[in-house]
Amino acid sequence: MANDPDLRAILDFAVEAAHLAGALTLGYFNTGTPAELKQDRSPVTAADRRAEELLRRRIERAFPRHGILGEEFGEKTGSEPSRWILDPIDGTFSFIAGVPLYSVLIGYEQAGEMLVGVIHMPALRETVYAARGLGCWWDGRRARVSDVGELAQARLLTTGTRPMYTLGRGAAFERLRDACLADRGWCDGYAYALVATGRAEIALDPIMNLWDVAPLLPVLIEAGGTLSDWSGNSSQHVTEAVATNGRLFDAVLHALR
Image 1: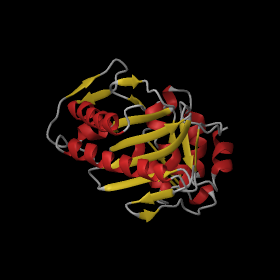
Image 2: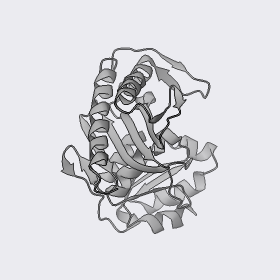
Image 3: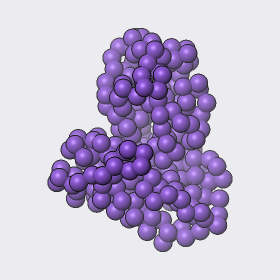
């Protein structure tokens, strides 16, 4: 599959679609767009919904037999073992607040394997994207994780510390945080893009959904890093996440345990 030209075409399609959806979100960004709360108490805006609708229309036209799973409109089953996994705005809280660290996430899965991932940050004009066997790229240049090999030199990123404690992970988080050089609250998909491009070494989340994780997995792997749960199991179906630059994987898991 690594040299399949169709996979390169799918990656190109995903990057283009992410840019189009991102451009749509910018039309709502910092304009006072109202938000409402969903049943799970997470915020949603018209920009989330319209960006996902745009992505679904493009996928349905180009790949009518593929399935689609999106955060806002659920799952449409396909007739082929191929599925697109969408988060139209990852970081809606940032988006609502006018913070430019939100992203459009697109993943492509075939027969249960994540093969393509895109993290597009419209307000920052940055895109990090990857396909299995084709490498990870950052706006046209090859992306690689950092070569930091000691926790004492590592930069740790989290979406927020409160969930660490409400979910009973406070002690584990503190052990890892205290072993690292620095910790910052650079969040959501942006944090994982920073790890993939060597600008941080660790990203940590105590709770994740499939549409949060799936697009990130090919990006981290192709950049030379890891993405797993806090026990080291790697899958798009994990419900928590820790990304590393690879060299720190064992040390991070040891600290979390």
